[in-house]
Length: 140
Image 1 (spheres, helix red, strand yellow):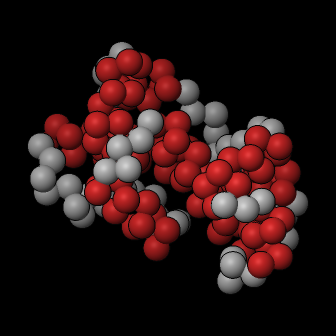
Image 2: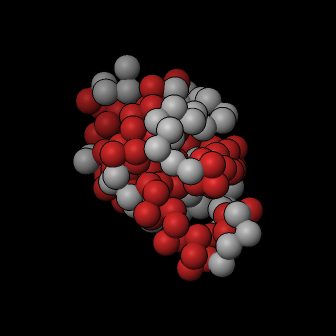
């Protein structure tokens, strides 16, 4: 991840329920880059529980999918799908801490149609399964 990418993930973890992305830390970006980041993050943060297609994100920025993916990776240091999944997992940890929903229900709420894929993604980003995460008490 780029330095800015790390900052955004850190900021997201502090304020997981915010709707609009912060422009803090974007001072080194051009106006066009700030608009790109703001547009993309706003859409992802508002629609993370839905099926987000790369073509849809690219269309929001008036780009081809290939150009969008390159631009996102250059600015954020990771592919858009990785960012979306990481954001979804961060939102899932909040649900694990605040609800008694099943893992299948949480997976669906944060945009994973398959609970097994959710568990694999959770392990990838958090280093343990959702069940182990709950048992460890880290959600508190």
